[in-house]
Structure formats: structure tokens, C-alpha cells
Length: 461
Image (cartoon, rainbow, N blue to C red; front, side):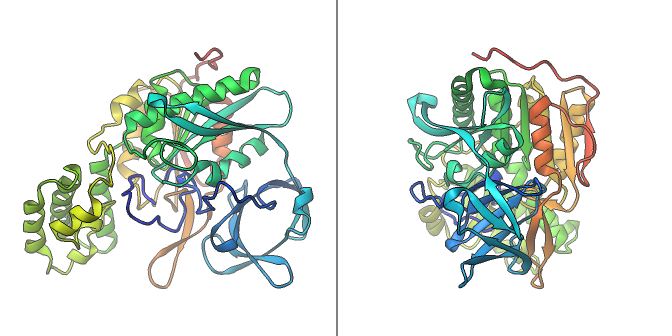
């Protein structure tokens, strides 16, 4: 799942678990708002570890520990559930039993685990233009003041309230979460859009609703946006004051730039030289012009470059974030298949002025090996902002890709994710608590400005 999404295309079966793409932009859990299994929840194991159980595809469940390990649980004939590693089909040795889940108890890896209770408030609030949006505030049990993270959707069409595991993982670590279905998804009204301006206003409305419901329990509040949410969350932070912004596997470049970067990166990984890459970028530019016109013009230019290069041996490797979708189709077919599939997409949006305007501390978490949202140029730009004195921390995780997952390469050359990067969840928890990082977070390389974060905002309007 990429930061940018074409409405009519199926979702990539991988890791959009954390907004974004969390995404994510999270995993492919069930999008049903009516089916609730007693297995679903955050649990504390007898050794103190936290494990989240979420519904996944085909009657399976995905487990996630706060350390980033994860797998899929498959039901066996003896009522046990056996796990496969990450997103692979390889057994990892873990077994679970859910016989007593109705009473809040499960067994995982031979240890008893008990469901962690939360204070949960369901709500409906007004987004931009009065559109009714469905949200949920999840707080740790009790009266303690806690930080609250507002989860900002990636480009997916699925219900965030159904699929985002952070709504349980963070409250289990004493950090509140407000999760909501973006307009046109889940139980929220309105039409799906990729217009960042509209989505930013909706995020502000979500933040204010979370603040209203939490009342005195809200110690500080901010956003976490994954993938496409990495464009939206900082924009929202310029429209109403917040205490922090966390961007996971997002971009500091435009949507057009994202496609160009992905074309070049994947061509390079296929072993092509600069001459072939330049030609591939010529093809991408023509395809991007068609997308930008909403399939109303520039097909002649695209046809010309396709005719010019389609018999070249490198042509089959032209991919990009969205260029590859259109290459097999005639103009008539493309108009029929894709027109109106990109509602409101701001292809030329430059996020840099917004990032400079954000006053709250920002945390940017990037995967060095991200193919969906290539991180090299974004990392360079964020470092530039840090050098300018902006209150930004940059964490770059080696061997991590979109969704902040580590991976192995299968025999067919495809990547298969095995787990979330160690300390990824911990890093977000800590930044939500105080707007800064301290210590070592897995294998990440952290760069941050030498400035003190501002005091928490106590009186958001």
C-alpha cells in the first residue's frame, strides 16, 4: 500500500497497518463494523509483555507485541491456533488458545494473558462541511492525565476503527488514542477524498473532539500520520495548536516526485543504468500528466513514449507509485477504468512550506529500504529542516520498508515482511509522552535539533 492510492485498485496484501498506508497503514484486518470476536483486544502476558490480537483475513488473527514481533494465527482442529512468522507462511512456533477469551483470558506461547481494560468512548462529530465522522477515544483505565495521539488515516478506504492496532497498543502503554474513520470510509459519511486540505480540516475536528471527550484527562495531544497521513497531519498542525506531530513512513516531497523517485529506485534495483532510468522517467512524466488531468488529456504524449520505448528490454521494469497502472491500457480503457478514481488528489502539493510552519515538535520515522515511499530525498529534506533549527527529530531504520516492517527476500525476488522494526512502537510512545526521544531505539539512526521542546499546550480551543 502506497502513500497515494488509486480508488479502483485492490489493496496490497502487506503492511498498511499504521495509518497510512498506518498505513497502514496497519494490517488487513476485517473491515466489518458488526462482527466482533472476543479474541480481539490487548492483553498482558504473565511476564508483563503486551500482545495485541486483531482480526485478519480468512478467519485468522494477527498478533503484535509491543517489541514489534508479529504473526498470523491459524485455527487448528484441536481448537488451538498456530502462528506463522510476520507475513510469511512459515511457522514460528507460537501457539494460542482462546477458549476462555469471553472472560478476558487467553493463552499465548504457554503463558496466560489477560485482556487490558480501557475507557472507551464512541462518538460522532462534524468534519469539514458538517460531514458526520465516526470516532473512538481509547484511554487507559482510571483518572490519570495522559497524552493522546490522534491517528490520521493513510490512503486506504478501510475503517481505521476496525483495523488500527495502535488504538490498543498505545493505551496499553498509558498513552490515549483517538481513532476515526476518514470521510467515505467505515461508518463515516461523505465521499472518499484524497484532498489534503479537506482531510486536514477533518483531522483538526477529530483532535478537538478527542480533547472535548477527554476533558481533564488530556495532558497533551497531537497527531500520528502514516504514509499519506504524513502529508495531512503536519498540515492539520498548522491550523490549530497541538503538542506534537509523528509522521511514519511519510514523504516531504510531492505526489509527482514520489512517483518519479519510485520509478528511479526500482529501475536502479533492477540493475539498470542512468540512461535507462532517464528514459523510464520520461515514460513516467507522460503517465503522470494523464493522471494529473484526471484522464482528460495528454494521452497523445503517453502514446508517443510508449510507442518509442515499449520494445526496449527495460520497459517491463517501469513501475513507480502509480505510473505502472496505466501503461497497459489504451486511452479509452484508461478513461473507463480510472476516471474519477483520484478524488481531490493534489499532485503538486509541496509539503516543505507546511513543515516549516509547524510549531509543534515533529518526529519523522522512515524506513531506509522503503520502495513505496522512497525515503532518501525526504530524509535529506528533513535533515535540512533540522539544520535550520526546526524542532524535528528524524529516525531512519535500516532494512525497514513501508509500514516500518523488516523483511526477507523470497525465492521469487519479492520482499516478505517478517516483523515491525524493533523499538518503532516504543519511539512513538515516548515522543507522544514528552515530544522528544532519549536513549537508543533499535538499530535506528536518530538526528535531532538541539532545541528544547515547547511546553505542552493546555488550552486548545
